[in-house]
Length: 349
Image (cartoon, rainbow, N blue to C red; front, top):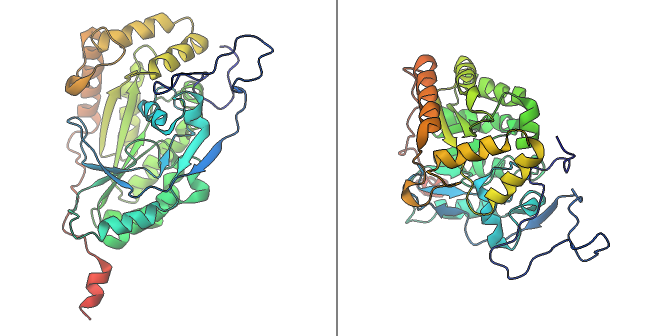
Protein backbone atom coordinates (compact mmCIF):
# COMPACT_ATOMS: atom_id res chain seq x y z
CA UNK A 1 0.00 0.00 0.00
CA UNK A 2 1.49 3.36 -1.07
CA UNK A 3 1.82 6.36 1.23
CA UNK A 4 -1.55 8.07 1.20
CA UNK A 5 -2.71 11.57 2.08
CA UNK A 6 -3.65 10.96 5.70
CA UNK A 7 -7.34 11.06 6.51
CA UNK A 8 -8.48 11.51 2.91
CA UNK A 9 -10.22 9.14 0.53
CA UNK A 10 -9.48 10.84 -2.75
CA UNK A 11 -5.77 11.18 -3.42
CA UNK A 12 -6.16 13.63 -6.30
CA UNK A 13 -7.90 16.73 -7.47
CA UNK A 14 -9.90 16.16 -10.64
CA UNK A 15 -10.90 18.75 -13.21
CA UNK A 16 -14.23 20.46 -12.60
CA UNK A 17 -16.21 19.74 -15.76
CA UNK A 18 -17.73 23.22 -15.64
CA UNK A 19 -14.34 24.96 -15.77
CA UNK A 20 -12.26 25.65 -18.87
CA UNK A 21 -8.98 25.63 -16.95
CA UNK A 22 -7.41 23.38 -14.35
CA UNK A 23 -4.39 23.25 -12.05
CA UNK A 24 -1.56 20.94 -13.14
CA UNK A 25 1.84 20.20 -11.59
CA UNK A 26 4.27 20.58 -14.50
CA UNK A 27 7.54 20.52 -12.53
CA UNK A 28 8.82 20.25 -9.00
CA UNK A 29 9.42 24.00 -8.67
CA UNK A 30 5.89 24.92 -9.66
CA UNK A 31 4.37 27.38 -7.20
CA UNK A 32 0.96 28.17 -8.66
CA UNK A 33 -0.50 24.73 -7.99
CA UNK A 34 -2.83 23.43 -5.27
CA UNK A 35 -1.23 21.93 -2.17
CA UNK A 36 -2.47 18.34 -2.23
CA UNK A 37 -0.73 17.57 1.06
CA UNK A 38 -2.68 20.27 2.92
CA UNK A 39 -5.21 18.31 4.95
CA UNK A 40 -6.82 21.27 6.72
CA UNK A 41 -10.58 21.44 6.25
CA UNK A 42 -12.24 24.74 5.38
CA UNK A 43 -15.84 25.44 6.43
CA UNK A 44 -17.89 27.82 4.28
CA UNK A 45 -21.26 29.28 5.30
CA UNK A 46 -24.01 29.27 2.69
CA UNK A 47 -27.34 31.08 3.02
CA UNK A 48 -29.92 29.41 0.75
CA UNK A 49 -33.56 30.44 0.50
CA UNK A 50 -34.83 26.93 1.24
CA UNK A 51 -33.58 23.68 2.77
CA UNK A 52 -36.15 21.13 1.51
CA UNK A 53 -35.62 19.86 -2.03
CA UNK A 54 -37.94 17.78 -4.14
CA UNK A 55 -36.31 14.63 -5.48
CA UNK A 56 -37.00 13.82 -9.13
CA UNK A 57 -35.89 10.20 -9.48
CA UNK A 58 -37.72 6.98 -10.39
CA UNK A 59 -35.34 4.90 -8.24
CA UNK A 60 -35.31 6.94 -5.01
CA UNK A 61 -37.91 5.89 -2.38
CA UNK A 62 -38.57 9.38 -1.01
CA UNK A 63 -39.91 12.62 -2.45
CA UNK A 64 -37.97 15.20 -0.43
CA UNK A 65 -34.52 15.63 1.02
CA UNK A 66 -32.67 18.25 3.05
CA UNK A 67 -28.92 18.68 3.28
CA UNK A 68 -27.48 20.91 6.00
CA UNK A 69 -24.00 20.23 4.57
CA UNK A 70 -22.51 20.02 1.08
CA UNK A 71 -19.23 18.19 0.70
CA UNK A 72 -18.34 15.57 3.28
CA UNK A 73 -15.29 15.13 5.46
CA UNK A 74 -15.97 11.39 5.79
CA UNK A 75 -14.04 11.14 2.52
CA UNK A 76 -15.68 8.02 1.07
CA UNK A 77 -13.74 7.52 -2.15
CA UNK A 78 -16.75 6.05 -3.99
CA UNK A 79 -19.33 8.69 -2.95
CA UNK A 80 -21.84 9.57 -5.69
CA UNK A 81 -22.31 13.03 -4.12
CA UNK A 82 -18.82 14.10 -5.15
CA UNK A 83 -20.09 15.23 -8.53
CA UNK A 84 -22.50 17.72 -6.95
CA UNK A 85 -19.58 19.62 -5.41
CA UNK A 86 -18.67 20.85 -8.87
CA UNK A 87 -21.82 22.99 -8.97
CA UNK A 88 -20.32 24.98 -6.10
CA UNK A 89 -17.13 25.60 -8.07
CA UNK A 90 -15.00 22.93 -6.41
CA UNK A 91 -13.35 19.68 -7.41
CA UNK A 92 -15.06 16.33 -6.84
CA UNK A 93 -11.71 15.09 -5.53
CA UNK A 94 -9.96 16.49 -2.47
CA UNK A 95 -12.10 19.65 -2.45
CA UNK A 96 -15.17 17.53 -1.69
CA UNK A 97 -13.57 16.41 1.57
CA UNK A 98 -11.90 19.61 2.74
CA UNK A 99 -14.19 22.41 1.57
CA UNK A 100 -17.37 21.82 3.55
CA UNK A 101 -20.35 24.09 2.95
CA UNK A 102 -22.79 24.45 5.85
CA UNK A 103 -26.17 26.15 6.05
CA UNK A 104 -26.57 27.86 9.43
CA UNK A 105 -30.20 28.88 8.85
CA UNK A 106 -31.30 25.34 7.94
CA UNK A 107 -33.54 24.82 11.04
CA UNK A 108 -35.31 28.15 10.53
CA UNK A 109 -35.82 27.36 6.84
CA UNK A 110 -37.37 23.99 7.71
CA UNK A 111 -39.77 25.61 10.16
CA UNK A 112 -40.72 28.12 7.49
CA UNK A 113 -41.41 25.24 5.11
CA UNK A 114 -43.67 23.49 7.62
CA UNK A 115 -45.62 26.70 8.20
CA UNK A 116 -46.31 27.08 4.50
CA UNK A 117 -50.04 26.36 4.06
CA UNK A 118 -49.33 24.56 0.79
CA UNK A 119 -46.96 22.06 2.40
CA UNK A 120 -48.20 18.47 2.13
CA UNK A 121 -46.75 16.05 4.67
CA UNK A 122 -44.28 13.58 3.19
CA UNK A 123 -41.21 11.91 4.73
CA UNK A 124 -38.02 13.93 4.27
CA UNK A 125 -34.63 12.27 3.89
CA UNK A 126 -31.90 13.74 6.09
CA UNK A 127 -29.63 13.80 4.14
CA UNK A 128 -30.19 12.82 0.53
CA UNK A 129 -26.71 13.80 -0.57
CA UNK A 130 -23.92 14.11 2.01
CA UNK A 131 -23.86 12.76 5.57
CA UNK A 132 -25.79 14.86 8.07
CA UNK A 133 -23.65 13.47 10.92
CA UNK A 134 -20.24 14.20 9.43
CA UNK A 135 -17.55 15.43 11.91
CA UNK A 136 -18.46 19.16 11.91
CA UNK A 137 -21.98 18.28 13.11
CA UNK A 138 -20.52 17.62 16.54
CA UNK A 139 -19.84 21.36 16.79
CA UNK A 140 -22.54 23.00 14.65
CA UNK A 141 -25.50 20.74 15.63
CA UNK A 142 -27.51 21.65 12.53
CA UNK A 143 -28.86 18.10 12.20
CA UNK A 144 -29.88 18.08 15.85
CA UNK A 145 -31.78 21.35 15.41
CA UNK A 146 -33.51 20.03 12.27
CA UNK A 147 -34.66 16.97 14.22
CA UNK A 148 -36.00 19.25 16.96
CA UNK A 149 -38.11 21.03 14.35
CA UNK A 150 -39.42 17.68 13.06
CA UNK A 151 -40.41 16.70 16.59
CA UNK A 152 -42.01 20.09 17.26
CA UNK A 153 -44.21 19.76 14.17
CA UNK A 154 -44.53 15.94 14.42
CA UNK A 155 -43.21 15.53 10.91
CA UNK A 156 -41.78 12.24 9.55
CA UNK A 157 -38.05 12.14 8.85
CA UNK A 158 -35.61 9.52 7.62
CA UNK A 159 -31.89 9.56 8.46
CA UNK A 160 -29.02 7.90 6.63
CA UNK A 161 -25.55 8.07 8.14
CA UNK A 162 -22.19 6.34 8.57
CA UNK A 163 -21.50 8.02 11.89
CA UNK A 164 -22.30 6.84 15.42
CA UNK A 165 -22.80 10.48 16.38
CA UNK A 166 -26.49 9.78 15.71
CA UNK A 167 -26.62 8.36 19.26
CA UNK A 168 -26.10 11.86 20.65
CA UNK A 169 -29.67 12.67 19.60
CA UNK A 170 -31.45 9.78 21.31
CA UNK A 171 -33.43 12.28 23.38
CA UNK A 172 -35.09 13.48 20.16
CA UNK A 173 -35.18 10.19 18.24
CA UNK A 174 -36.96 8.25 20.99
CA UNK A 175 -40.07 10.49 21.08
CA UNK A 176 -40.07 10.65 17.27
CA UNK A 177 -40.03 6.85 17.14
CA UNK A 178 -42.90 6.58 19.64
CA UNK A 179 -44.98 8.60 17.19
CA UNK A 180 -43.82 6.51 14.18
CA UNK A 181 -42.04 9.51 12.72
CA UNK A 182 -38.46 8.35 12.20
CA UNK A 183 -36.38 5.65 10.53
CA UNK A 184 -32.59 5.52 10.87
CA UNK A 185 -30.39 4.01 8.19
CA UNK A 186 -26.85 2.99 9.16
CA UNK A 187 -24.46 2.33 6.29
CA UNK A 188 -21.94 -0.48 6.84
CA UNK A 189 -19.54 -1.15 3.99
CA UNK A 190 -17.19 -3.68 5.60
CA UNK A 191 -16.29 -5.36 8.87
CA UNK A 192 -12.61 -4.90 7.98
CA UNK A 193 -11.46 -1.72 9.72
CA UNK A 194 -8.29 -1.58 7.63
CA UNK A 195 -10.38 -1.51 4.46
CA UNK A 196 -12.83 0.98 6.00
CA UNK A 197 -10.01 3.31 7.05
CA UNK A 198 -8.83 3.76 3.45
CA UNK A 199 -12.18 3.41 1.69
CA UNK A 200 -14.07 5.85 3.94
CA UNK A 201 -11.36 7.27 6.23
CA UNK A 202 -13.29 9.55 8.58
CA UNK A 203 -16.39 7.47 9.17
CA UNK A 204 -17.06 5.73 12.48
CA UNK A 205 -15.26 2.46 13.19
CA UNK A 206 -17.05 -0.83 12.55
CA UNK A 207 -17.49 -1.35 16.30
CA UNK A 208 -19.13 2.06 16.75
CA UNK A 209 -21.49 1.51 13.83
CA UNK A 210 -22.59 -1.82 15.25
CA UNK A 211 -23.06 -0.23 18.66
CA UNK A 212 -25.27 2.41 17.06
CA UNK A 213 -27.44 -0.30 15.49
CA UNK A 214 -27.77 -2.03 18.86
CA UNK A 215 -28.52 1.06 20.94
CA UNK A 216 -31.05 2.47 18.47
CA UNK A 217 -32.81 -0.89 18.22
CA UNK A 218 -32.89 -1.31 22.01
CA UNK A 219 -34.64 2.06 22.19
CA UNK A 220 -37.30 0.94 19.67
CA UNK A 221 -35.99 3.26 16.96
CA UNK A 222 -36.45 1.49 13.60
CA UNK A 223 -33.06 0.73 12.05
CA UNK A 224 -32.34 -0.30 8.49
CA UNK A 225 -28.76 -1.22 7.63
CA UNK A 226 -27.47 -0.43 4.16
CA UNK A 227 -24.71 -2.79 3.05
CA UNK A 228 -23.44 -0.21 0.66
CA UNK A 229 -21.86 0.11 -1.66
CA UNK A 230 -21.02 -3.43 -2.65
CA UNK A 231 -17.72 -3.33 -4.52
CA UNK A 232 -17.11 -6.70 -6.21
CA UNK A 233 -13.69 -8.06 -5.38
CA UNK A 234 -13.37 -5.86 -2.29
CA UNK A 235 -16.29 -6.36 0.09
CA UNK A 236 -18.92 -8.44 -1.75
CA UNK A 237 -17.95 -11.59 0.19
CA UNK A 238 -18.97 -9.88 3.48
CA UNK A 239 -22.70 -9.65 2.70
CA UNK A 240 -23.79 -12.76 4.72
CA UNK A 241 -21.76 -11.87 7.83
CA UNK A 242 -22.94 -8.24 7.90
CA UNK A 243 -26.61 -9.16 7.46
CA UNK A 244 -26.38 -11.84 10.16
CA UNK A 245 -24.72 -9.55 12.69
CA UNK A 246 -27.02 -6.55 12.28
CA UNK A 247 -30.04 -8.85 12.50
CA UNK A 248 -28.71 -10.13 15.84
CA UNK A 249 -28.40 -6.52 17.01
CA UNK A 250 -32.04 -5.74 16.21
CA UNK A 251 -32.10 -4.20 12.72
CA UNK A 252 -35.57 -4.40 11.16
CA UNK A 253 -34.39 -4.27 7.58
CA UNK A 254 -31.38 -4.38 5.29
CA UNK A 255 -30.67 -3.10 1.82
CA UNK A 256 -27.77 -2.84 -0.57
CA UNK A 257 -26.52 -0.92 -3.57
CA UNK A 258 -23.56 -1.64 -5.82
CA UNK A 259 -20.88 0.90 -6.56
CA UNK A 260 -21.54 3.32 -9.44
CA UNK A 261 -18.59 5.35 -10.66
CA UNK A 262 -20.37 8.20 -12.40
CA UNK A 263 -18.49 11.10 -13.96
CA UNK A 264 -15.28 12.19 -12.25
CA UNK A 265 -15.74 9.59 -9.49
CA UNK A 266 -14.43 6.95 -11.90
CA UNK A 267 -11.09 8.75 -12.15
CA UNK A 268 -10.90 9.25 -8.37
CA UNK A 269 -11.74 5.63 -7.58
CA UNK A 270 -9.46 4.09 -10.18
CA UNK A 271 -6.53 6.23 -9.04
CA UNK A 272 -7.27 5.18 -5.45
CA UNK A 273 -7.54 1.45 -6.05
CA UNK A 274 -4.39 1.33 -8.18
CA UNK A 275 -2.48 2.97 -5.34
CA UNK A 276 -4.06 1.06 -2.44
CA UNK A 277 -4.77 -2.37 -3.97
CA UNK A 278 -2.60 -2.60 -7.11
CA UNK A 279 -2.69 -6.42 -7.06
CA UNK A 280 -6.45 -6.57 -7.55
CA UNK A 281 -7.20 -3.26 -9.22
CA UNK A 282 -7.79 -4.76 -12.68
CA UNK A 283 -10.09 -7.47 -11.28
CA UNK A 284 -12.19 -4.98 -9.32
CA UNK A 285 -12.48 -2.49 -12.20
CA UNK A 286 -13.44 -5.26 -14.64
CA UNK A 287 -16.13 -6.60 -12.31
CA UNK A 288 -17.55 -3.10 -11.82
CA UNK A 289 -17.78 -2.83 -15.61
CA UNK A 290 -19.43 -6.25 -15.78
CA UNK A 291 -22.25 -5.40 -13.34
CA UNK A 292 -22.87 -2.12 -15.19
CA UNK A 293 -23.18 -3.67 -18.63
CA UNK A 294 -19.64 -2.88 -19.77
CA UNK A 295 -19.44 0.63 -18.26
CA UNK A 296 -18.34 1.99 -14.90
CA UNK A 297 -21.90 3.20 -14.31
CA UNK A 298 -25.30 2.92 -15.95
CA UNK A 299 -27.28 5.96 -17.02
CA UNK A 300 -30.94 6.94 -17.01
CA UNK A 301 -33.87 5.23 -15.37
CA UNK A 302 -32.23 1.81 -15.77
CA UNK A 303 -29.11 2.90 -13.89
CA UNK A 304 -29.81 0.54 -10.97
CA UNK A 305 -30.21 -2.48 -13.25
CA UNK A 306 -27.31 -4.91 -12.87
CA UNK A 307 -25.76 -7.27 -15.39
CA UNK A 308 -23.66 -10.43 -15.49
CA UNK A 309 -22.82 -13.35 -13.24
CA UNK A 310 -21.20 -11.19 -10.56
CA UNK A 311 -24.39 -9.20 -10.03
CA UNK A 312 -26.42 -12.42 -9.96
CA UNK A 313 -24.14 -13.76 -7.23
CA UNK A 314 -24.45 -10.54 -5.18
CA UNK A 315 -28.23 -10.46 -5.52
CA UNK A 316 -28.64 -14.10 -4.48
CA UNK A 317 -26.19 -13.82 -1.59
CA UNK A 318 -28.10 -10.84 -0.23
CA UNK A 319 -31.54 -12.41 -0.75
CA UNK A 320 -30.56 -15.64 1.02
CA UNK A 321 -28.99 -13.77 3.96
CA UNK A 322 -32.00 -11.49 4.38
CA UNK A 323 -34.51 -14.35 4.23
CA UNK A 324 -32.48 -16.36 6.72
CA UNK A 325 -31.88 -13.67 9.32
CA UNK A 326 -34.63 -11.03 8.94
CA UNK A 327 -37.63 -12.96 7.72
CA UNK A 328 -40.87 -11.60 9.19
CA UNK A 329 -39.40 -8.27 10.30
CA UNK A 330 -40.97 -5.07 9.05
CA UNK A 331 -40.12 -1.41 9.32
CA UNK A 332 -43.18 0.44 10.70
CA UNK A 333 -44.90 2.89 8.39
CA UNK A 334 -44.75 6.59 9.06
CA UNK A 335 -47.73 8.27 10.67
CA UNK A 336 -48.52 11.06 8.21
CA UNK A 337 -51.52 12.20 10.27
CA UNK A 338 -49.56 13.37 13.33
CA UNK A 339 -48.33 16.61 11.73
CA UNK A 340 -49.45 19.78 13.46
CA UNK A 341 -48.48 23.46 13.51
CA UNK A 342 -47.95 24.59 17.13
CA UNK A 343 -49.05 28.16 16.32
CA UNK A 344 -52.40 26.90 15.01
CA UNK A 345 -52.98 24.88 18.16
CA UNK A 346 -52.37 27.97 20.32
CA UNK A 347 -55.10 29.82 18.42
CA UNK A 348 -57.66 27.37 19.81
CA UNK A 349 -57.10 28.87 23.24
